[in-house]
Amino acid sequence: MRPILLLNITGPDHPGLTAELAAQLARHGVNVLDIGQAVIHDRLNLGMLLEVPETEDAAMRRALQHIGDQHGLHAEFTTIAPDDYEHWVAAEGRPRFIATLLGRKLGAANIAHLAQVAALHGLNIDGITRLSGRFSLRADEPRKRACVEFSLRGEVADEEALRHDLLAITRDDEVDVAFQRDDLYRRQRRLVVFDMDSTLIQCEVIDELARAAGTYEEVAAITEAAMRGEIPFDESFRRRLATLEGLEVSVLERIARELPITEGADRLITTLKRLGYKVGILSGGFTYFAEHLKQRWGLDCVSANELDIEDGRLTGRVKGEIVNGEKKAELLQRMAQAHGIDMRQTVAVGDGANDLPMLSIAGLGIAFHAKPVVRERARHSISTLGLDGILYLLGVRDREVPA
Image (cartoon, rainbow, N blue to C red; front, side, top):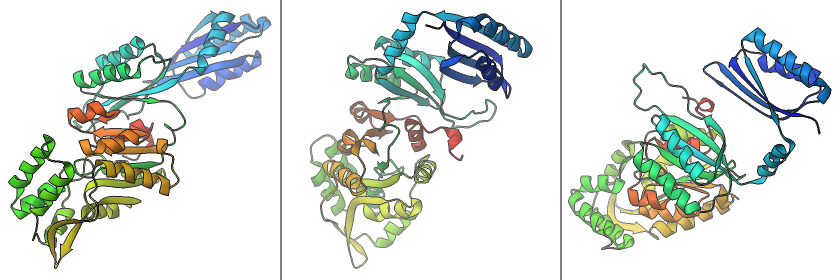
């Protein structure tokens, strides 16, 4: 068996350097078994696992050292035992995962906490990649984004315990952590659906309607009772809606024009559409407002509750079946089937307890700025960034998206 060498080269980077090094290896008949390169602040870090003809070993080392001396590089050679190489090859089949760490900024402690959890559960870090763009330390940018992606490998004995430990990081640090299997479906999502109220928009439309109708306090009391479990969702929905009887349709038009769009929604949906995703709304709110957003973004599908209107006023009733949590999950499955999309290729995003059924069946379910009870029950959550933080969970880098 030919000698196996691990070559590590560090130093100042410049164009053509990798080409020069590889050309020299080629002259000595070297096979490259593995390679990885990163440039951080114009400093090159290049690693190669090489299979070297025994007769060329010494000459190859001298040639690389000469290149290093010319360019101010440090070259280090480590001999790899054949058994160690075979053990490394055998590890190739172990499960792979992606852990995404994101927030407004990331400190060494955040990275340490994630690395410690990975080690605790027997996962090796194969690589770390920055997905977020660079930001100035001088400019005051309140909406800055920071994200790194960890490529992990290993057998996880207790995924629930791992998820619990990752959730603890998000409670203690001002960061979010997403943990996904690194499989074909993670890289091939095709359908993304959003809850509307308090997800795509920063309000609850029924509250805005109640304010216009002068029934906000009554509606708020019903909502609180429902959240305490004293009233079933469907009954609370009908009771709140009944308080809006007689409200003029012109009020709906005004509220629709003034909907407060959530940070990052425009950037996220524009990017998803450019990448060919099907994008839709699955809302326990109202189709009147969902259709307004559909036109804004050119969405593919919308399902929500249809307000009953007579003579230009609300009747206080809803047409058809109420879109509750179970209905959302059913509609997501229908949307995926209609577009010929496997459920493992779907993404669902929402903030409330009534979103949990669809979050649980989607390939990637994300609780967005949700209450603690929803975050703990959802598999993934984002609480530190805007909606465009979801792009990181899809593996999209900032440099691939227009600002």
